[in-house]
Length: 403
Image (tube, rainbow, N blue to C red; front, side, top):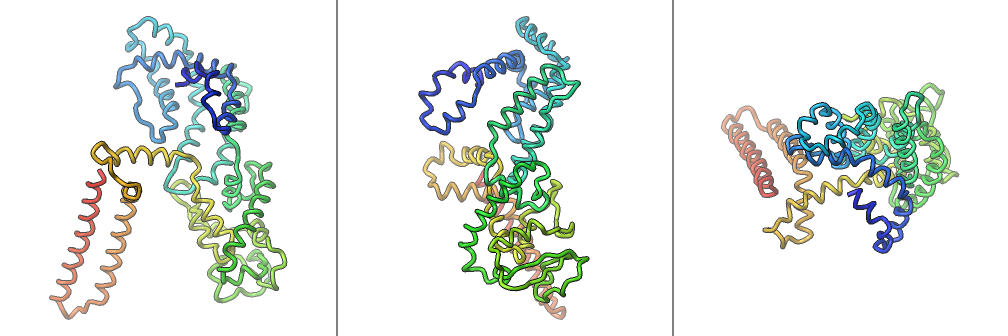
């Protein structure tokens, strides 16, 4: 595909009527594109002629497939000559330097990890873009023991990361709304821009939710102090919301952006965080707990963290839609397709919810059932089992229907 792109490079402008595409097109350096195609030629020739069993045909994220192929290529490097019966391919194989290949695979390891992290679809990922992007840029700094080939690769990728991966306001908002990234220690030059964007979006969001917000903290000035400071006692009805920090409510708020200042100066305790399986904090649960202290920021966070960091989720959805809209199901309406895809993506979650509801109902009914009526208890338990079995049968039938 890259070869075709290079071959048709000068014919593309006539087909790119959209100015956005033309802007991306103008960022591409033709000489550098030709060099990359030339560099990849030996790899392409060898991989194409491997047997089907020796190829990697699946990638978890779809976007890191090339990296997986390169890793497997390096792992099977010394076994490949037996599969390359054509002398022309052996000539291409002999052009590949194993040491350079190993260094390239080692260098690309963080790239593969970043792709996997940003392709996550079960939890928010937008706040990871700025830190991970900066991590990759830092990894592209040339070191003293780097070979000439790796140095060229690092220079090229560093330039591409800066030019082709721009930071947007959504990235800045997601980062500053993450309590562990709000100081921007990973990328200090983005801090001031992020604060300005947050203030702008805060004022827009404030006009939307303020008329409907009855929380007294919206109209009061909240002074946040550490637990070691000598302050007045906490309000009884809000004490559960402030954890180990003390909050003093004073006169009417004079600064309309005081909530932002309070958040940026607030020193959260580890008890405020709940960590997920990836080692990151559960950011949605965090803001749910903080919504009484920072109501407008909490509302803004719900909107921002719903934005995915990459389009891999959309690509997976397109792949799933091909399995739903088949040759025998071409008359499905848009609403029906949306419902089927929703069920397919959330079937396991729905099963868990049904299971939890049945468990709660069982506990509730067992607590109200009298111990003196054995027959009644037996009938109740039997009915509960029938309800549970019916619920799971319905989901099993739904699963078969989706397949």
